[in-house]
Every structure is written in C-alpha cells, then in structure tokens.
Length: 605
Picture (cartoon, rainbow, N blue to C red):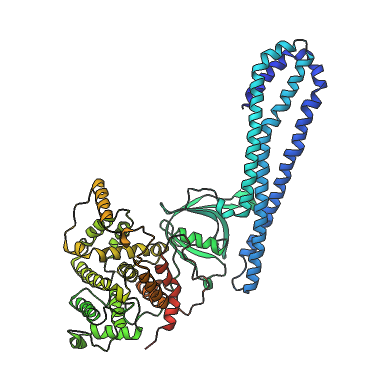
C-alpha cells in the first residue's frame, strides 16, 4: 500500500470540495483529529518512554559491566562468583528491556500504516453525505476506495499475524537466547576490550570486533554505548596466532593475546566472560600458553630411520610376535616409563646393542617392549607419515566412497620417502598380524587405529583443529592395516570414474559386510557377535586408564612444548576443550580425561 498515492487521490477530492470546507471541518475533530491524537499519545508516547527506559538500562548495564571487568583476579573466589551472578542478573534485565523497546518500535512502525490512512478515509467518507455533488464524486472515487479498503484490511491482518509471531519469538528468545542468534557472515563477532598503550600506562578501549576464518581478518571498531556509539576509525589486521593469556601474568580476567601479520607487537584483548573467551579462541584456533615442562629423558630427534632404527623396530616386532601376540590389550596397556626408557637406551646404545642382536631378552615384559616401539616412533624428528602429507591423509579419510579412500591413501603412501614407506610397511604388516589374533588379544583394527593414529600422524601444533582430526587419523591407520598388501605391494592405479566407483561400491557391498573404514566416519569397529561385544566391553572397562594413557602419550610427547606444567594450578587450562558435537570419538576423546591419572600412577625411576 502506497501512502503517497493515497494522499494524491485525497488531494484531488479536496480541491473539488473546497466550497463545502466549513461543513467538513465540523466533523473533522471526531473522525480525523481524535484518532491521530490518540495514536500520537498512546503509541508514539509509549515508544518514547520505552526509549528512555532502554537508554537508562544501557547506561546501568555498561557501568556495571566495566566495574565487573575491572575486578582483580586476586579477589576471593566467592566475591568473583557473587559479582558474576550480579552481572548475569543485570544482563538478563537489560536483554529484556532491549527486546521490549525493539518490539514497541516495530509495533509503531506497523500501526502507522493503517492508523494514519484509515482516519483520512473516514473523513472523506463523511464528505460524501453532506455535499450536494457527493454522489458523483463518490462514484468516481469508488474504485480507489475499494482498493484502499482492501489494502488497509490486508495490512491490518498482516500486522495482527506478524504481531503474534513476534510475541512468540520474543518469548522464545527470552527462554533460550543462544538458539536464536542472528545469522552472521562472520565466524565470530562481539564486544572486546583492547589494551592500548599510552604515554603513561595503558587503557582498555571497548571495540566491536569481527573475525572471518577464511581470510583470517580481524576488524576492530571502537564503540561505546555510553558515549553515543562509534568513537574512532575501523582497523583491520590479518591473524597470525592467538594464545590464551596466563592468569598470573595480568590483573585482568578473560584475556588472550593476538599476533597479526601486518601489525607489529602483540594485541591483548579481554573478553566479556570465560565462555566468550573460549568461543573467540576456538574460532581463531587459539593455543594454550607455553609452560615449563619436564621432558622425557630421550629428547625428540635422537631416533632416526637408519639401520639402527629399523633394527630396533624389527627386534620389538619379533619379540611381540613370538612371545606376546595373544596378550590381551597389546599396545593398549602401557609399560612403566622408567623401564621403557631403560630398554630404549639399551637398544640404541652401540655397546649393548650387540647383546640384543637377535632378540630382546625375555626379562623385558611385552607391555614394556610395545611401549618402547611406540616411544621410538614418537622420538623421530617428524611423524612417520610426515607433516606435509597430513592434511592430504585427513582429506582422504573424509571421502564418502570406500574405494576413493583406499585409492587416495594408496597414492599418498607411495609419495612418502623410501625409508618412511619401508618402516610403515614393516609396522602395518605387524599390526595386521596383531589384528588377526584379536579374538585372543582383543585388539581389533579399530583399537589399533586409536593407539597408533596420534603417533604416526601427530600434528605439528596442538590446536583445536588438530584435536578434531584425531578420529580421521584413526581411520587412516585402519585403512592401512586392512589394505596393507594392496597399498604396499602394488603400484597406485589411475583414479576411477564416478560410474566405476558406483559399480565397484555396489559389487563390494553385495559380497561382504562393510568394515570399520567403510562405515560412516562417526562409527568405529564393533564385533560381530554378542559374546565378542561383551568381551570387548569388559576389557575396555577394566583397562580404560591404560587405553587413554597410550593415546595421551602419542599426542603429548609430540607437542611437549605446548603442555602445561603438571604442578601448575592455572584454572584456565581447559579453555580449549571442544564442545561441538561429533568432534571426537568416545575412545579418542577419553585420553584427554585420563592423562592426569596416568602421570600420577606412572612409577618413577
């Protein structure tokens, strides 16, 4: 409905009725002035009152928030919790007042569409009764009047329907605000306090910040509601790294540091809450601060893929296959750390290596030998499957078609250096041997994938994205074990066409049930019979701590520089725990919980 067009028609009628203007004015107060005055007082007046209330609550909330953020982290925990609760109450009240103000403004905007035009139409309708030439004029005006009446009614109906929907949405937003956030093109956005250095000290300036993960662009706009809005020029930088700020290194709470490619120095930012900081760091692939940690006796890089390295791995494999292939929890149960380090020193020492030239002495337990094998692989300068190919292996594991996964991984393996491929073949042949005896040792292909995935594909940096890829690392190892003969003994084939992939998938699906690596990516191996499932559950429940310890060693040893000191009492260490669904498998996610218990129970030399 066009108000301007309506006014043009009304003006034409008014010019023709100018002679009878006095009689028209007698009824103008009732049919025209009073409704508009009522609309002004009731609707516009109410909107002004809502605006005053919103401004008052905004000033109150911003003041309390700044006071809350200026609290020192050295305050007592009870005082901090009480302050947090008070801020949450004020924030909730501010949120409700904001919604009411927006709702009132929207209502006034919609009402004026019909409450302004409708009195004018009634006023004109009265003219036709009193004027002598009203009949002819009404006849000419009839078509437009009908159209306008229908348009007004439709507008009213739309308003009533929209109003009920808006009220329902407002109630839902009050009940659960997080589920009704506005869809944004940015990965993360919100208010942050940015530390700015002055000539005398520093100050914290409130900014509205946005971040886009694809371009790694951070945009900072100075904005303060109390001062009337935007207070400076926009600034955009390209993210280089993001690190959580240690609690004891700054008096402010919820802080993290950002390094930019195109700006020197470190930008220190303060989030509005612990949860807000976690979301910002997750969006930026943030990392934990570096702590001083006690490293293992054997430092990374002492192991090599030379004749000594191959000899050590062959000796360990020979000992396992001849003496302990049927031992339950093989490679999952870890040995005592001091014994493992002692065995490695014996195997790597040229003076004592000749004594173990053919086999490892029977005095060494199988769990010590398996732990020594895994530790040696982690001591290599880089992972066996190399950093530069890790993203390609992960992408291959995410392919939907089974033949595509195997074919892509087959091709990637043959791109590895010769020594890496030979060592990987030696290890996969052995793990296939172990998996063939899973009825006795309870180590299926899936379990071996969980144990060796983080070791052979350990990430270069311990980030949230690396943690999310753990389950795909496991799937890569499963595919290597299940298809080791094809992958290592044949040359990669030319990639299949879509039609060939569809036909081969159909044939393979008709001939045998899918293996673990052929099933959806969120699933793991399950034994075929109920009896096997019960056996597996019992052994997993009885040795869960050993399982997660083995996985923890695989990741933690590869990124010891990123691990916190075990004696540290920093309350923010869990800031990067993933919360997204289906991000980790149940077993691979469990090692995060069990790493402390492993270090407590591990005997010391």
